[in-house]
Length: 372
Image 1 (cartoon, rainbow, N blue to C red):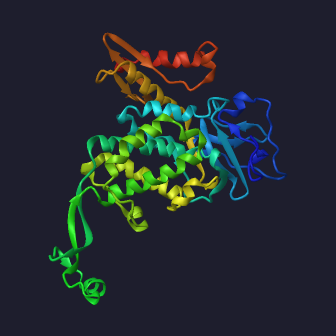
Image 2 (tube, helix red, strand yellow; image 1 turned 90 degrees about the horizontal axis):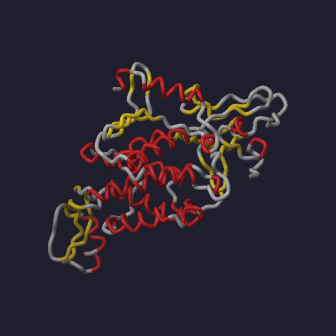
Image 3 (cartoon, helix red, strand yellow; image 1 turned 90 degrees about the vertical axis):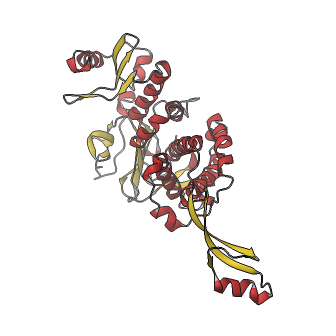
């Protein structure tokens, strides 16, 4: 894939690039060196680095970021992003989020650098927005399954022959009495229902997503999106999408409705991603804040979902138990079966024998007494 001039070598790199293209050397601008890019500042998680000899060093992260702010950027795509597999990373997320309890872990998947200058890309190079959309739709689906939150909210309405709540004198004189309609009174009063600020925010984000999907040809035909919209939209029929920018940025979730917390967080990210303008959702050329997605974490959640499919019993799978500074991926304890399992996001396992270091790691975990 050839990219615009502001991208390094005008090409898309892949995660673990040096492992796949060992002999590749990038062409460094004369006298230039690039600071390594780390995931959330963690120096043990290298997203992208250009070594002094021009080799690329990176790990299991995909995304877009500036090497030289405003001048030279890097674009890293999934290593499984081959013909017919463009949606592999989203399919993993689809699968994992079939289990609602995994949704809370999904916010650990990405880092968005809102304070850095945006990077110009094409819609099809946008790896972040589809990820946010999938997470958001699943979060809203969980809310609809339980029922939308009802709350008191203030409305203004013109009543005929009666009054309710607070009389809006100025509006009544201007819009009714001045035109001879003396029985009509403009009132402001509280209503209890689903058209509260939280649900309006979710509805507004849903409208953005609906406008976005047709512009992304790889996503528009996905059954997940079609089925999810058919399921959630009827619940929002009585909800307006009118919500002010101030309400969006200052909205605080109610702890009694904890399932709303993640949905509102993701809705804000989506609206901010599109600049709060619905027309921006269908643009083919876009700008994106620098971001990184942790593919090894995504694969881990994908495997956790598969394990829960295989062993649906409560307590059968323990995720990330910690023992004396060691953190295991999974403990399986069901029907007399006791196993230590570790997720390895490595393509070589499709054709080669397991790595000895990986075997030693899992074997070491299994010898810990606290595991049993």
